[in-house]
Length: 469
Ligand SMILES: Nc1ncnc2c1ncn2[C@@H]1O[C@H](COP(=O)(O)OP(=O)(O)OP(=O)(O)O)[C@@H](O)[C@H]1O
Ligand SMILES: [Mg+2]
Image 1 (cartoon, rainbow, N blue to C red):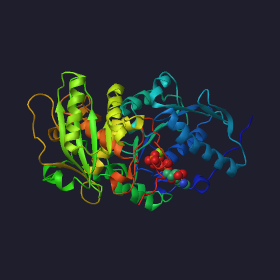
Image 2 (cartoon, rainbow, N blue to C red; image 1 turned 60 degrees about the horizontal axis):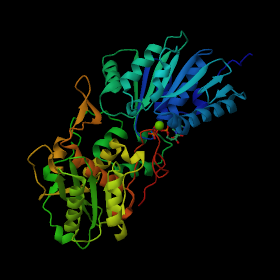
Image 3 (cartoon, rainbow, N blue to C red; image 1 turned 60 degrees about the vertical axis):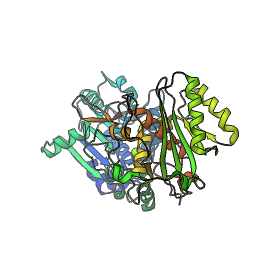
Image 4 (tube, rainbow, N blue to C red; image 1 turned 90 degrees about the vertical axis):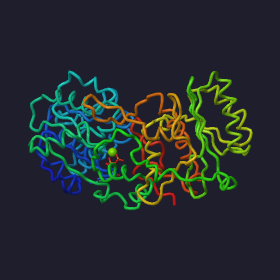
């Protein structure tokens, strides 16, 4: 079958904004659209995939997303919308075959677009490709350099415009972000970077960006919205400082007006629980902790219950957030505190268990872009414990990211079994607490973090999340 010759004014038909157009038309073999949240990365990358398929008839290419679920809910709808736009502009249906089973779209010009999640990147090993487009590569569970190396070696089908293009918000100056940075600053013509902030996208309403800004830590704001790749730090809580976050605290003064929230990390022989007084203005003060090496489950239950009741003077806590790994222990908490109207919320969904998001929520409260910290620590907390299990203050200082083979910090925290338990306990309380406006001065915190499968947990999140105040 003959396909019509294509003479298309890309800019007129699709109307990319200036930075998107610059990226789409760059001639380097390896192109990187480093963009802020909502900057239009996925829109651009799917258009790039379509352009590649139109320019390279008869040969296959690949569109990669964080997961297949992310592809179905995010990237493929964009790609189909671009195909519709193309059909309206040309009066011609470009799709010859669309197959969910094969995860591919074949166009009338014989070009094929395969789509895959990074979790199945191995399936592309040994394939021959003409081009590849990869979305959010810095946030995939597979290391970005592994993806890059696997794919670039598969791009070997001769064609008019071979190439590898990436769209991602940066996750530190490491991995392929660092590689592209070094190559472009070194003047290598095979590499190209276009950088766009969230503000660059004229289709994103400014109040959406302002809502993100008010909910994010300064570091995260600069990285995820202004798309500045920061040098990674090996310390997880680099925004924590004794002078700013450790405050003289009088528990009694707030006893009648605060809500009590507890985070509990049940360990086999290491267990930590932390107690927060949450004030009506939305500040969380970690006022006490139980750091224990229990001899048995029975001992720990007894100690925990005694400590909670002493801390609150028998007031019913507002929220208990235990680790769901121990259903039996959680049933025990339910039986004791559930009847007193305490919410017992083991972190159940995989979003909440996603450690990276939990840590980001803590960082956001420690160092918001605007205003004073919302997460503070009492100066009565111990600075050090004997032995190899530590409380929250030493843990905040010592909790580290794992290093990669070059000694560069990754974004995965290292579980040293000394400093991770107190952090886990605090993180669980904070993540569970994100559900209640009561715990945040009457407004639900804006969550703009994605789950491990690249999909937002609910419609209040993501690009179209609205401010709740
Ligand atoms: N050139 C454009 N024309 C029309 N709409 C656009 C354009 N670019 C982006 N958009 C719209 O802006 C919104 C955000 O785009 P997109 O989802 O691609 O951003 P993103 O950077 O991938 O966001 P996220 O960080 O959430 O992954 C989408 O609704 C998209 O349709
Ligand atoms: Mg996107």
